[in-house]
Amino acid sequence: MATDLAHAPDGRLPDERFRHATYTIKRSWFSLFNRTFRIYAPDGRLVLFVRHPVFRLRGEWRVFGDEAQTEALMLVKAQQVIALNYVYDLTDLALGEKVGSVRTKGLKSIVRDAMEILDPAGQVIGHLLETGASLLRRFLPFLTSKHDIEVGGEVVATVRQKFRFFIKEFHVDQTKVIFGDDLDSRLILTCALLAILNESQREQG
Image 1 (tube, rainbow, N blue to C red):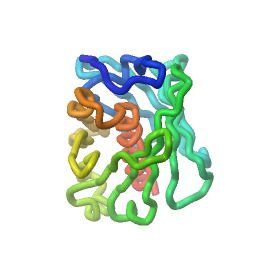
Image 2: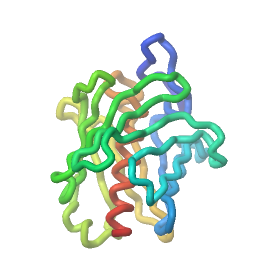
Image 3: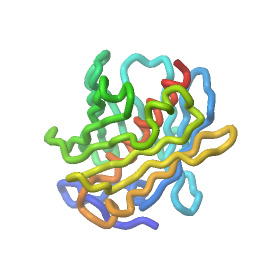
Image 4: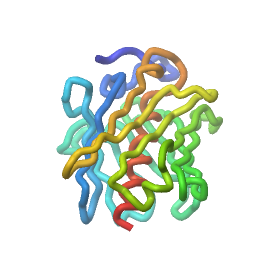
């Protein structure tokens, strides 16, 4: 099911593939040269696809609308090459606009993932926080992860890992955001992907 969320400055809506209330993100347990993420709509359709190169120094990757990677929808690009606190700018390639940014909190994320969500002007509008037994998960990666996305101290979206054999599966629930004006769905998906990337990097050392 798709519905309205934040409009672009000229009134245009983001691609309908970014307007679902829930998503399922899947990736393989192990891969040598890239991390592949398949993102599914509530009805099971593949709607978004990401392949992140393992050995690329600068944090830059695209979100595609198809597995053949012929339709680039979003660009995620880090401002710094090497830094403790990365700032990832998110650009909607179809609309040609900056959606906002996600700033990682390097030292804090050693024990628990922590990110700030910024609007296009660079103002903090939300946070992603890892919950549960985060420290234990650093040593026992088979434990499932939990992340909350907050605005004004209220949880408006969640990222929950589901235990599966041979595949990593994460459920994103942003129902409160889709039906309100708190936060852009595209930024929530970027936060979810960054959290999952952090996990895969820890697993592979």
